[in-house]
Length: 546
Image 1 (cartoon, rainbow, N blue to C red):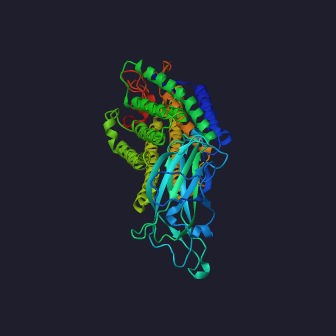
Image 2 (image 1 turned 90 degrees about the vertical axis):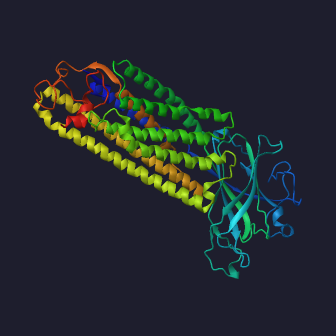
């Protein structure tokens, strides 16, 4: 009888396919390690202190730290000139990028971290639980002589978390607090060449606005953006892999539809996995180079979430279909206890993302990390997500162990067979076990990548902007997903090759091994005829144990 390609392809050809896939996997890591630069770059800025001579200004005016029409500025608040200026007339101006540089759409996004330099004064200390009210505006332009165009304006609050390690005495006045960096701004696209931030710290003693926050001397910013070289390598990978997965998916489904029976559950899930891989592969990011699509970060998170949920669900069903008996197989409803939590977790990821990046579409200065409650929720979410990912992997290992135990129980019947048939089934068992181990390896790498990605994003928001994942890890994991999906669709496609006359005579391991029982042993769940499943599938299931 005909079976899946993993059953009927010769060992030599399978080894060749495996070596080719392994070489592509090594190439994916090498692309990131040898060609692509680091994924992100931090750039440090110090705000220039500009003076707004007009009190209670009504019209909008932008203060540039340098260039044409630069502002009237002061170097330090200790200057005699500065002592005559009220705090409400100080505008902290930051030009992004630095002099003689330009921003580029290839940078994809921009995350800005803010940190205050606050000097200790015995009679102007930071109060417990103090918050800073920030009146901030963002403008852009695409040349050095045009007027600035407002992009966003907001009144934000950020809680100060500062420590003073020395003794709070008059001798230590002028020394700086150790203040934690705080999230400030995130843009989902970098469509313009120049950006300007104007930051005011309005003071109103009657309303207790910016009172008890110490003596702020300087404002430091760190701008983090994706490297243009990494973006180009990433886009090139997506452009190459999209048609590869699309072609193998069409070829796989065409072979399924040519059979005389309807597709079984696992075949449908493999197709869905291929569709989700194609969805995340499609390089729509190319449009972000020419269009100011600020929603691309959110859209990318949604695509990745769909793929995560599909991949995790596939592994559960893939193992489950090799454990269920014949009456339970091919029914999606039996997996609701396993797939349900995956879908729920993905939905929670979506809600969490919408609560931050969804709001940032209209207000780039919003951050869920800005409040105590938001920070605790975000931290709890990252920790719970990491724990759930680890528990999922342990559960998947348990399912694979059960599959291996079922197969090992059947191997006791192999010695009673003829040598040729015994070698045939031992080969099938080895191939299937090897594929399951590859699946576990892929699952482990996926869980590690998910946890590191979440922790890395958290470190950005906490201000530890030096934390970064090597480019090779990103390109390697992305290549691994594509190669795994490609291999699954190729190996589980129905084969047109028929195993020899002896093997197709209907000899069965169960019952009378030397006789004809009318059924064969299967490891895969692909069914090539209406009279029964293929070989690997039945051997792995409960039916083979009875």
